[in-house]
Image (cartoon, rainbow, N blue to C red; front, side, top):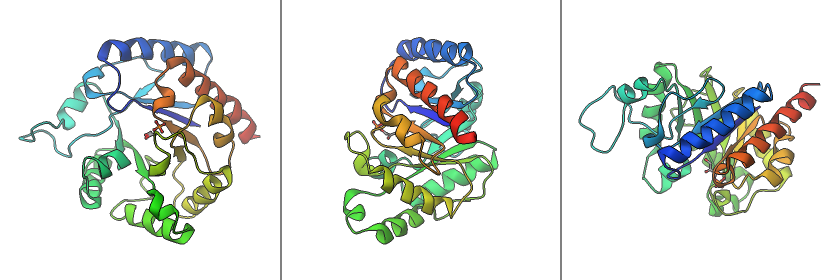
Length: 239
Ligand code: 13P
């Protein structure tokens, strides 16, 4: 299982340090073998422990240069960052990233061997048009993306489920993940209003190999509970 926390623009450097200390020691004390990734804000990057991977929520696809307000490969290398989130709906819809720029970012970081958590997901009006329209929409989000990239993880995050407390039914998650599985052998995460209370049943579904959690992971102890659930399920699913 792969359990990820996306902090978005939450937590200070100090808060992140305290959070990482809790999660690091939980993972180590419980011998967790699942992959745990935290995506903190840039200002909180540093070399943390060995048990929890740290990734970035974004970066500009260049070594360095005149790109005001961005950070690039050179700044990631300083902290040994080799994991990046690409295609998140907030970057697509709020920050205006186009599929073309997303694909360019994907190519750049794939060529440098990064682990890429690539996000896809439909807005509500598309979901309301039915499953064919939904899969067509997601197919467009795969334009320019190498679905055979070995270090690819895909996160299905319906836009209408992010930060709203709403989630698709378990059956719908399984349906979409089944359709995604037909396209790629990359691990598939679900994201969108995952909390301690629903993480277990979501991770237990077929073709769900983990979760990408926003607000529900801001508490370190809640995130640890979800890691524990993943590790228990891992044993069951592997039987
Ligand atoms: P929430 O868990 O807050 O709905 O956010 C999900 C998300 O966008 C993770 O990347």
